[in-house]
Image (cartoon, rainbow, N blue to C red; front, side):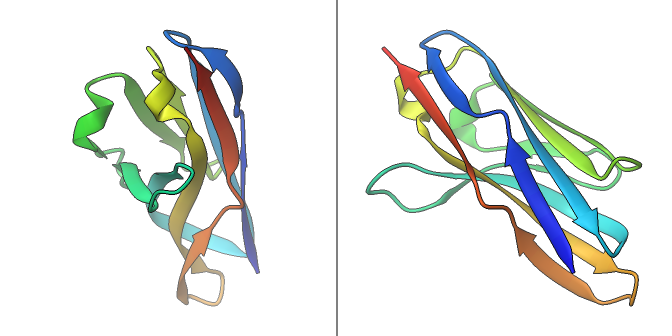
Length: 120
């Protein structure tokens, strides 16, 4: 079994920064692409960023250069550095990863989410 655990959310003023973490643990052989998603109240979940196992990163247009995704393949951890935060960034942030288990099966996992609240 594999678990993804996010942390680092909180309350911050507009213009501030937060760094989210997503730690994977369990019977992991390797991790393919890792993603950040977010879901604001009353809205559908939306994709924020992706990072491949070779550290190629892609971002949603609304990121506008404010966020940076990174990962450590040894620690099985991904981060999302969020700068210049706006009230519209308020949401629950989720990590998602395609994990190859020690049994060599590929399964898509989600974390439980971490709340980010940006006050104006």
